[in-house]
Length: 207
Ligand code: GAR
Image (tube, rainbow, N blue to C red):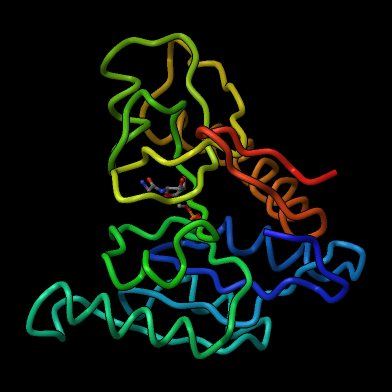
């Protein structure tokens, strides 16, 4: 993806509290950041992530899997909804669904996801719980370019976070999320401003 002279258009997809979305909204308030959130989508209604978008004056849409005959129909509708906002980069920020073939055909190579574990360890929906159960001493977060797998795409950035003896899932996840928000905003900003290339799974910024 090349660098550009105008701010990059971000569409952010969320499923929950949207603290990562908020970090992006806050970063985009600075013109020098080089990106703006043009829409926020969700797979469920009545979530704080959508309320954060409303408060920021950003348009929202909701596409629930259960409202469609099958997963592929949902994927096509989600893809069209995102495409209507002409994003340069799509950010999955706590979006708890796997996107499908239609989405990948349209946005593959320019969709990033943030995961609360150090890939390739502990993919899936419960990274912090799985890391804790395994007994690792270090976990963290991973920003990656989405591919067809579950948290398997080329890695943009990772940040390590210590696991403490008295951690429970919530305390570990909250510590990871502090690091995650910084990792997300720093690297999405660089992707927007500098552009990036992916060669043999290696993601490199263009300057
Ligand atoms: C984040 O920790 C994100 O990495 C995780 O959900 C949280 C969302 O927090 N996503 C996944 O586990 C996806 N596999 P937020 O709604 O406050 O941004």
